[in-house]
Length: 431
Image (cartoon, rainbow, N blue to C red; front, side, top):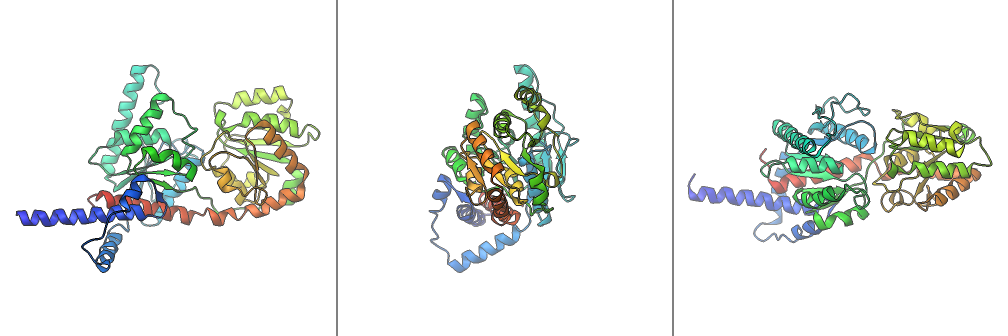
């Protein structure tokens, strides 16, 4: 190719990259320092008609993306549920979607569409000893890099903090752009000193970072190129809650991993205190985790062991959850709790602690849910109020069903599609 030809190709590539930068800046959910810089790009030498034609051509080329998604597993949890739903809907929308998981897939609790290519890496469990851990991390990164290399995606989408770091550290500078998604509150979810520092460094390498709330986005912006705020979504309820039977059942439900951050230890204390004068109330907590034995021992010491049920993960959850008289979220911190969305969508009156991120965005206190201080006393007071005021409780449940309109799947999937297309345009990935 002669010099003039090379100049022409170079100008074409620059035009496409410039259009991609404007698109990333203009993508509906995307905000942040880098985005504001990109928004300043000028349109000096082309008419609006030419820009519209170029944009339309790019839209047609990017109508179907090749997307490689990554998550540790599909073994329960809210992030896993959202990843399964998102990959399935992206594939049904015409994209070529693959899902890389770090486990072997044998314990999956969420179903993905048949059109999603599942790539389980079957990586070993955590190693013991510093040298063994180092070797394990290197092997994990090689496995991720090899999988992405075979799939040759236009863009990589990763969920959850440690998975995000593994994917970014495994990425090649010449490889596809990586979009990482925080599924909890990064200001509260400490990874330890080393990994916290690694996150601040590695997130600068991501093409974009997705936060669940504006609160989390503010924390992420100082060490991210571009930040998008995309909340989780909830399905329309597959069952209808029989509220008359649910009220008579006198059952409080909780859902989540049995881990310290989920706060079920303080829910047990609040439940014991709030129902001490009416022991016909029962507490059911759906989930698994390392704190199961500790919670059973605590329940015995509180004298409520015969009123507590820990049935583990139950899928689908809608049917048993719809039978609860009251749903309670006692977490010490949250991202954007899927369990709360699901309970409200089913018409189950919902009570939650007022975390810095998540519940206060979902619940309009006193109208469609009940927010309390993040303490045993706050939980106890909220439970006492709602188990003794049937009319208020059921009014909250009826109003809560509108959450489906506010946080629907179509909106969430559209936001991800806009962001991923904008990222691909900016990075001018060869197709």
